[in-house]
Structure formats: structure tokens, C-alpha cells
Image (cartoon, rainbow, N blue to C red; front, side, top):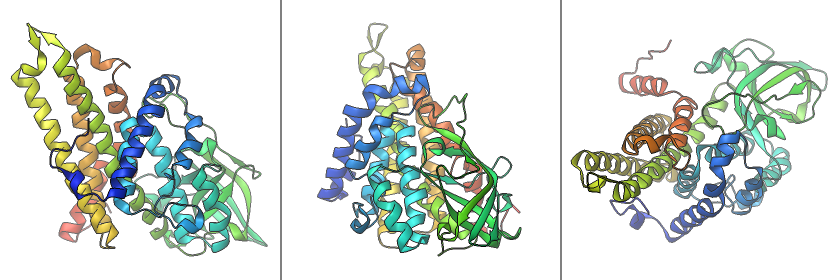
Length: 389
């Protein structure tokens, strides 16, 4: 069932529809049959990585020169929507690889770095992660304490990062650190490679959310980096924040996919579950829940389509992405909670996707900027006054 009450499908190009339908079919055949067992076991389905790469879903907006698909931003959004309709863990893997690893290597890296890493990352032969958040610095990344020191022939890196998707799996980590002093203007990006002496990436256990995703710490103890592992073309917070804008854009689409999955399950359940002699879909309160879900999903779809159009035109602002991420993740959380209520006791079972999406969205609501932080971003844009200093 394609949730499209306002015929947004007619706004898409033939290529965009083909990409969406291809990813939808992949999720139906490859993700949904296995994702609940991985969720229960707290394991990531590694066997999907080469298949995701073969479909061209990693770094899909980057140039074909680097082995990427060269797609537009609406197609990229639809990819995220369909992957998260399967599970946030699958979309998170793809999103980190594409927006937080491949994008900074392409935008901020040297041509040698691009040629070394992007083709392998595009196929999934190599896996990447993004190291910004620290144990004591999340919403305030400028306070990071991870440091790099210039030495003869390169740099020495010390510090730690936390809540890192793909960290334990990664062949390369894009790590942000303060170079040679404690000023946020000194923040630089470094490529830290698996196996470098002093670099470890232990997996974080005990999560109730994103259980099918690998979440890790990154620990750097006198890690020696050659000069060529510095991203040369950006300095300061502009670098990591530029990456986060890309990731938040994808998340604003992805959250719709989670909401669609909960809505689709709710419609099917309402039509088949019989109480008091008729399907519960015949009761007013159930119809109200379904109408509210459909309304909010439709509004979110229109929002991201416009945002994608602005991005394609080079007119998108980071604050507009904050609005979309803030609205759409909150919307998806509310849809999931309403769907949980509609499914009754069955809503907590793995037989249905509701509780899995609901728990995952609690993480999506936090990462790449919390709901409250995006509220303050918008507040500053409206008033010109920063409220978080």
C-alpha cells in the first residue's frame, strides 16, 4: 500500500518513481523478512551491505566518477524513506555512509582521498563512520575535547567519541578534533583507518532502541596520522555541521517511512480485527486515529518534497532542514504511539512493526540534533537572538 493521499507520485519524475519502487521492493524482499530477528538479537544484517551497494544507494547523489549514482536530492530522500520503512537501523547505516562519510570526503577531501575511498564506500566494500559526539559534548560540539597535535610528518590524535553508528564495523572514521589549540575554529577533520595503532572502537551494548544497528565508542590513544589523512578543504564547525545538514535532510524523509509502516499496519489491523461484532475500523475513535495519521504523514510528505526541490535548486538553508527534521520525527513518533494504541496488546509483539519503529524513533528524535535544539535553531532564525549560549 502506497500512502499518497495527495498524489505526490505525480510530482515525481519517472526516474524518481523507479528508484523508490526499486528500494521498496528490496525492503519487502530482503529487509522485512529478517529485521525483527536481528532487532531481537541486537545484530546488524551484514549480508545486506553489498546488496545496498549494488543498488547504488550509498552516496547516491555524488558523481558517477567516483562509482556513485549521480541522483538528485528527491531521489535520495525517497531512498531514505523506503529504507526506514524497513527499519531505522538500515536507513541509519546508509545515511551515515552517504551523508556523514562519503559527503565530507567528497566536499572537504583531496582528490586522492576521494579516489581512494569513495568507490569502495559506494559498493559497501568499505564501511565508514562519523566521529563528532563525545561523552560530555553532544548538542555543543564546539566544546569537544578530542585533540590533534601537529608532529613531524603528520598528527597525533587523542580523545574519545560516543554514540557512533557503524563504529565497530568501520574501515574509516571521519573524526573531528581540535588541532593544536582549544579554539572551535581549530576543528579539523581526519580520516582514521581501522587497524591504526591506538585506535579502538568497542560496541555499545544494552540498547532498547536501534537494536539492529551497531553503535560504538571510538577511542584514540596517541594515534599517529599521516599528513594526507587531514581533510584539507574545511576548518571549524562549518565542516561537521555541513555534514549534519546533509544527514538531517535524509532523516526528515526517513521518518516518514517509519510512520508509513505504522500507518499501513494500522489500516490492515483495523480492517481485520473484529470486536463487538464488526471490524474495529468501523468505530469512530479508530477512524479518528487513522485520519490523524494520514493527515500528518501527508503534511510531512509535502514538506520534504518542497525541501528537496529547494535543495535541488541550491536554495535550501540549514534552518529549513531543522524544521523538517523536527516536525517529521515528532510526527512519526506520534503516529507510532497512536498505532501502538490502535493495535491493543498486539502492538507490543514483534509480529507487528509498531514497537520496533516506536523505539527506534526515540533515537532518531535525539541524534543529528534533538527536537529542542532544532526548536532553538528555528527560534534564532526567527528572532535573530541565540537562546543556547
